[in-house]
Image 1: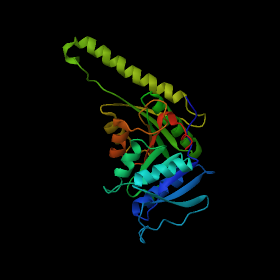
Image 2 (image 1 turned 30 degrees about the vertical axis):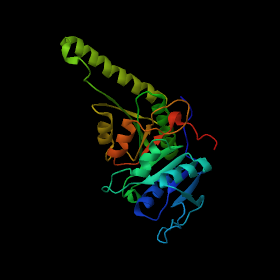
Image 3 (image 1 turned 60 degrees about the vertical axis):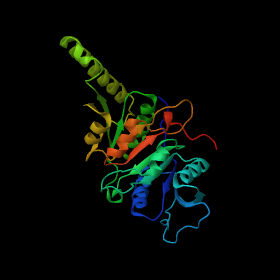
Image 4 (image 1 turned 120 degrees about the vertical axis):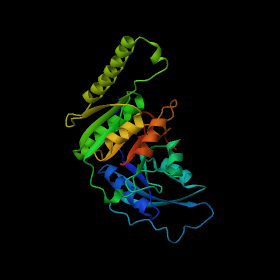
Length: 277
């Protein structure tokens, strides 16, 4: 497993809205203690910034950056490339309190952003500090990268740690086989999932004692429900596409972001740092 992606430079969408205030709180919790937080204001190219859009005053180790682009998603991506950011944090787009509800900007960044992407649920600015970290795990290289970063955050914050994995009992032609054969196959499938969870737990740092959770059914639905009210931040890996170190949201990671009630961090392929601009 490669080393964890630590969030030394974090870009947060700061437009003065309640959603950006939620994102800022989560970004401040995710950035490394010796890291830097960049409060990004994106304005449409050719137009001046609206007078009501005022980013919050930066704290120590933070600064404001304004960038002009044809869209918010493009502007954040370009700024993240220029800043060599490890993570972009955005607030929820509408929705209800406690829901991540990623908007068009977050979804565009999930489908090709230059670094990890996180969405803070509505009302996150009122949430308690991180006490429990979760990771969705399917033994893929992308999931392993997400797990490593989740472990790093748990170790730094002293938080509890849970690893979630799912299995399905249905498949093509299952009903046409002998019931005993099907039963044996399902038991083997369960054992394989438990084995990969146990193997993932063995990679934990010495000061992290992870809990493994095996779930049955749709991965996004089951993991989101298991995390609700328990996990304070959830890590997931993005789908891998060749050697390019960018995020490409697969069905599970995007569905997790849509269904979850805690911030979801989607890492780029293999948790790799942003390539030089």
